[in-house]
Image 1 (tube, rainbow, N blue to C red):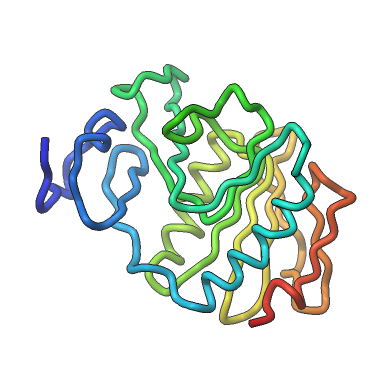
Image 2 (image 1 turned 30 degrees about the horizontal axis):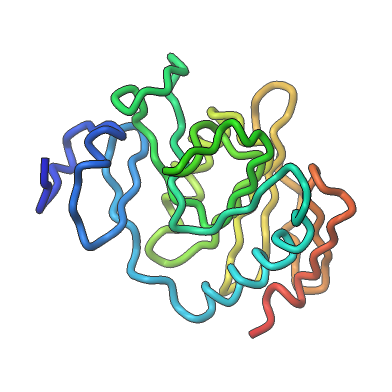
Length: 196
């Protein structure tokens, strides 16, 4: 099925997604198509690299792996069945960390990563803040970082025992140091993250 102009009112699966031949990347969220924004700009790419680098260095030789977009993360639905026809959500997080390596295959990750980082843009902020927040929370992503490039802040959400995200009371700013809860000895200076 080659889709030139997708029917945005339709519902699709990962099996459909794999057949599309578009020049533009897309994500599926609960079966609905979301075209991704144009290629990230210099600031977005700089922040992504400044975050990816410390994770890459820290995780070398360890059991967890870090990945940067484009990288398919397939989230099984409530049935938890993992066939291509059952998966209605496929996202491309800017950065994700996976510690259960059995979730990895040649096409990406099946199931929730342990940590996801999304870097906002004016095209994706509503989707990342609302839709992906809900998807990641429901899927059981343990930690979700939302990076605001213009404000130079990061919001951190940690999954509680009740399956709901708990947010930090204030955004982290350039003078702060951030550490993932799963790697408390990894310290990332936000001054370096937001440097050009």
